[in-house]
Image 1: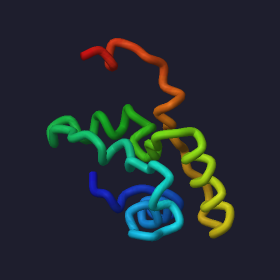
Image 2: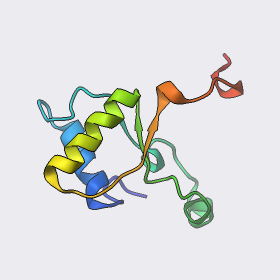
Image 3: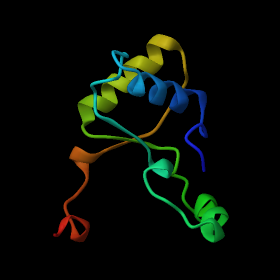
Image 4: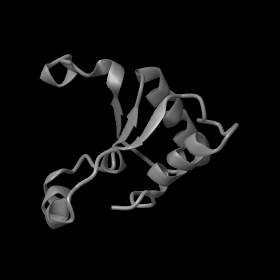
Length: 96
């Protein structure tokens, strides 16, 4: 799945986050969940169908997600879903 998939809102946020000096350049946007990991092509359809969260935007903090929401409202881009890493529960995936 390419980086340009997703809604107008997702595309707008990613563009503003990647643009040097952009409105969201320093808010901790890491990217679209589906772009942050690779899915083997033979499983792409199954994973894409089963995982409705692939278009969620991963951000470092809740404050960063709030800045993104303000950006969406300001530009009338619609809605997006966020995964703020500072609110993720610690678990086995954090062990070294």
